[in-house]
Amino acid sequence: MANFLFDVVSNLALLATVLLACGLYNRLTAGPAVNGARVFAALASAALALDAALTFLVFADAQNRYGQFSAPAVFCQRAGAYLFSIVAAFTWQSLARRKRATRMRADEALVIRTSPYSESHLRM
Image: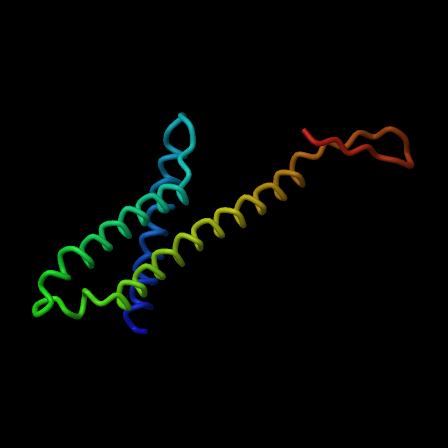
């Protein structure tokens, strides 16, 4: 369990780093925005594929030296940590998008005074 928690914490730290780097890149460049959650998902998927290759191809051949790393149960814990952090990235992105859309709706509403008794609200 301690290894799973360490894997989750390290993956979430990497997620924070990727989101920070993508946010800085988006602010400093004028090109299209880079989606931090998708970049992290691509990196975590590549790491999961390499982890599977190491576990089942490299460590499986040297059971006496790397027996603790080649167990399928240990790989499942690491895969669960990768998948949990990918789900957390996309959840964080959707919550941020909702919050931004709500803020944009409230800030960009145009109020037209049509009469003393009514107001028209138009979204821009």
